[in-house]
Image 1 (cartoon, rainbow, N blue to C red):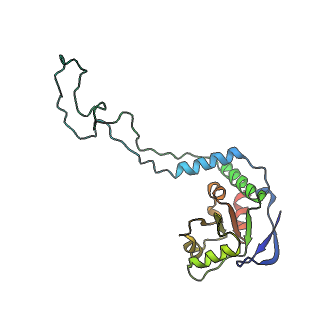
Image 2: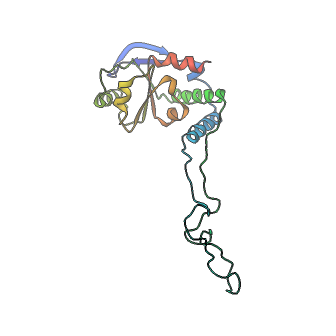
Length: 209
């Protein structure tokens, strides 16, 4: 599959690049995608939810009423889950939701996600973007000229581009990642991928292992 390389102003450079068919034209595996996205979202959970049990709530431990002769059930403490303000039975406790996923499955999931984007013609190749200083308006202008202003965009750079990252950090519908950081969730969550020319060999090196 060949794609035209564009300048940052949206104009054609007259050059084309051939995408690796093993990465961008593979048969997608939906189950691998599901597993990887599930893993990414689970790993992102804080897991700090917590409710108090009866030994943790504040309150008197004095017996509320005599044991027998009241016509009601026995009650020994206001901390009982049966009373308002009492502890909670089987409430949530802090836990780690993350789970390990085989590296080959994660690799297959990323390849599948990239293949879906290539199949839908939602990949744009641009020359490497250099910025002298962080400037959000410059990134907005680049996206406009690439006709991606109103779309959710993932920009993938060949190397860490600090100025580009800082410039797009407060843009709600765009995200910048280096090629070594891309994951299945971010690829699928974006409507369009903007790949720097220098990102392609890095992606091929990582996913061709």
